[in-house]
Image (cartoon, rainbow, N blue to C red; front, side, top):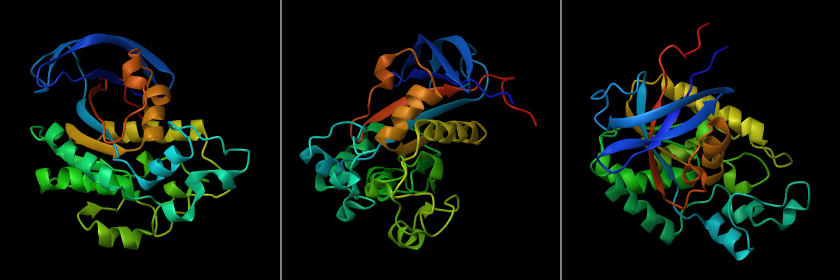
Amino acid sequence: EKWASVILAPLLHETYLLGTHTMTIHDEVEHVQVIGHSLALGSNSAVSGPVKVVHFVRHGQGFHNVAGAKAGLHGVACGCIGNDSSQCPYTAKEIEDADLTEQGMAEARLIRETLRERTIERVMVSPLTRTLRTATVGLLPEIGPVPFLAVEEIREDMGVHLCNRRTPLSKLQVKFPHVDFSMIPGEEDTEFAMDRKETMSEMTARCRKFLTWLRDRPEQEVVVVCHAAILWVMFTTAIEIADPELCSEFRTAEVRSLVLTFPQGSCSHE
């Protein structure tokens, strides 16, 4: 099966994209120079194929982030795998499917200003509480009727860490009635295991599945609200990108706006 190549370049406010990147998806590599591609999309012929403007957003500060900081942990790595997970702050019952702190709520509200002038067609959000809350606080007051869709493939790494175990679906539907949960597989989080952490290759497969699905969607400009680890995997393993700044860990509530171009003729055919 032949997979699409994905071309990314950073948005420079309301101007143009300039840069040369080498990137790969699904073991295919393509070198492309992105020159003067307007945010209006379609006004410049330098890049061919389906084009998406994607605003990737990490959730605001959650209670699990505070617990991790108190324990001296930083970033997406945790040393509990293969050791004594009972000493890991992310396994504490009180931060299961962690919500946002007051600081996290304030961070989420700042997202409104970042994306206020954009023409968003859909918000795609991880089905964990902190991402749903971030999307709701940060975007719902601004974009109103734009649909919110919960997407399983962009949730945080699964297993061991209770902060990443999803709340039962019926409870989420009550808390976030504006979100379409039709793509979430069931009431309980059956994919989550207390004794096994999701592997990097499994997370990469999820990212690739999401990108392929996104390629075939009708929307041209979307927001994707998810998590530090899955974003890091998305940017470093599902897509190879030359600019190291784009591959660094997201800060809480950080927005990185990218243009994804799926070259014509590279889509798979069955």
